[in-house]
Image 1 (cartoon, protein in one colour):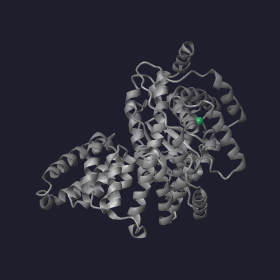
Image 2 (spheres, helix red, strand yellow):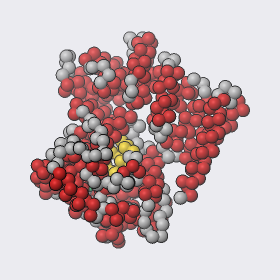
Image 3 (cartoon, rainbow, N blue to C red):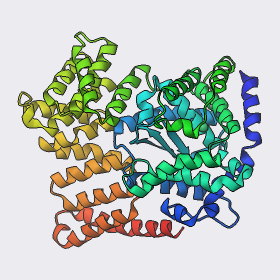
Image 4 (cartoon, rainbow, N blue to C red):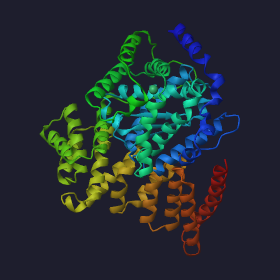
Length: 523
Ligand SMILES: [Zn+2]
């Protein structure tokens, strides 16, 4: 409804624009050690953070997450999360929550975080982290999207800047806990673990959760974003109720989301009450709405997430048995069970059992569907891990499967096919698929890793080292990137004759990266 949209704009713009440049002022207030440890940029004396600094903050956090091995390198989950996120961001623009001149500066990077807890964060520097546990326990894409919409709204409403204004005294603790919590996710070092453990305690002491008003606002506007993106807005209330119930049953501290987002019964009730008044999705000039993920795909990703974060072999066995009891012809629910079982069997090294389940699925799934591609990908990974344990699978069959995997447009499937392709002598075909993708997406570390493997298999050391350098660069690790290019440079006298073009590229990239890295470090 039109009047409602106008209303929304008025509400949300009132406090928004003037503070746009005042986010995360907190650098100056933080204890130096903490700030340095988190690897964050120094800020100006006036305490203002420019968009450039904001981007730099995001870049540092992004690099930190990769360096600490906090990111789960699973392209299927990453692509799914990006797909859930994209309509929310478009809707936030459509609703006028993001200033039009600012929106193009945000290139969100959505990362699956290797954590079993129920949590997600969106940072002003355009980094979204989603704990894999949240995917595992969200009952639907709409429920998952409701949490992301809430996080997105903390960013668009400049809540961090507003908190600074309201309670300046507590801010250093608040930010330290937030940033160390983010930076330490997935880390194995004692210091980081201590910081992680300390963060909630700090949070409780200093009231460093988002305040109730901000939580309410993130719920209210987040729910508008959710509905406007085309998701079911009632999913927010369902998710809040689920979190609350889970928290009551299970007070082992694994529900991080509840610590950073205090919950009350009234938030659940309010979310339910608002549903009827929300506007229909889309229809804004100049905002194109990305497609929503299909409802049938969520349980496939949920199973993937559940198995990825489970470290309990008894649980893998239970999942495997459940799936093996499902009988053909498989209906949709039984397909999900069989997929869950295959993932669990693969994780437990039950290669033959996993293969059997996957073969059954491959026989009933429509070719080219996301489900069929996911099955094909897991088959190829399984075979590449243990070809001797699948003697019934002949090499020509694997070659045909690799060919199918590379013929489609799904990058996650190319990555699944990588090791198998190398083992059946198809490195050239793989490079031919990866190269144009990397020209268009030079900041894709997962595909650079596959490229490095392929070039090494082709015995092209310069190209392999350069791909390793690009991989490090894409993860924000400038020093490591330069080291790889130095190694490539040392090989030039021997290798340049065979790889003349690559030799030129190595020199050009070495110069460009060295300059860009020095600039980044100086900021
Ligand atoms: Zn919140």
